[in-house]
Length: 147
Image 1: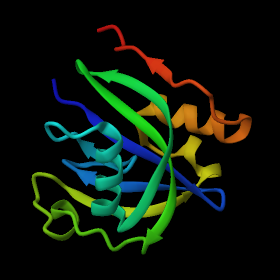
Image 2: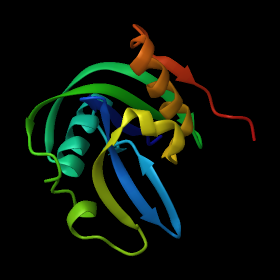
Image 3: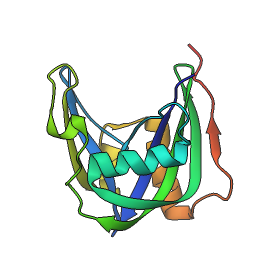
Image 4: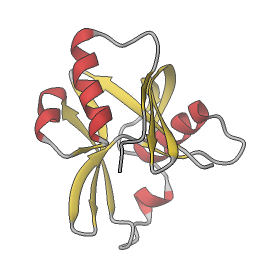
């Protein structure tokens, strides 16, 4: 079973997101990607952050685990320890293909999150809540929504 791993990266009341234009849709998503065989999900989150944002991060904790289309997605709270934002070297960042759409790293003010198309919505809602109330000690598990 393949799965996805992503980060939640906050700095100065802003969150790092990837702005996407794909097949006529405009939305934002959390930096991350598919876990390679034999790679721990935490390591995937660190690697994908380097590839997409140009940042070195350390994982602080697993915030949520979400089932989507039969595959787990892991969302980690991360902290910057180095690098330069916007200098990602991933293939999707430097060699865009029309069928995959565009990828643009950006900082979004947390106050704008409720009004923007941030996917997945469930994780966006958790970020809005936890950024105010504090991060949970144990991860939130979000089951597959009913068909």
